[in-house]
Length: 112
Length: 113
Image (tube, rainbow over all chains, first blue to last red; front, side):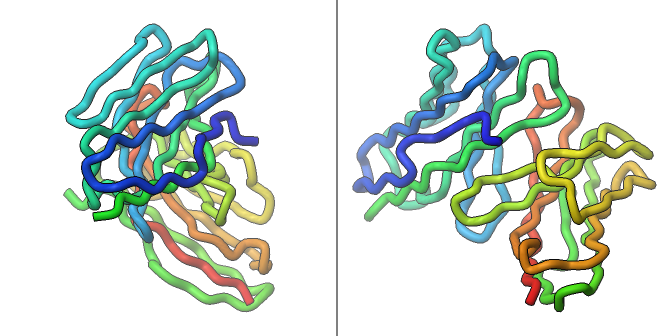
């Protein structure tokens, strides 16, 4: 069963706008990762945030983690058409470090 | 470096046929994974390996077998294909445990008729 659930399932915005995607999970974690998947391609790692971190930045990406609410958000600022993709969160489970559990993803469309 | 490669890219099987999907990585990673991706279901873990000669079951292992005879290769076998195994299969590897990022292959699109 999925550990993480992304919200919304689909998001359509205009180029230049910000895009925010949310991820909720069920059990305590060691870390949470975000991945991007372009249509017909494999997943690409974007960013990892550890359970003792609250916020992390990478270029136009900002990830927050609230362990008390068991949720994370991915913000893409000044979006571009090339950001059109599906975005997945993935979590491990505290006490088990061998595998990730992926959510069902948010499909982001950035219109030029 | 090629990263993670998968062969074949596409395959059509008839029900009951068998096949093997090959995953290869050239990053000297210890951990390797096989996932399947179905519409609306995200990625689900089939089997994984934490090192050469080891394998373990994931979330949806039934109908699949795996082998990791060499560190750089992870094979996924379907002994008797069923239409329910129609999916896109992804292989991934990571340096060590899941506190490290996973690197994904391009995927294999399998159709079972």
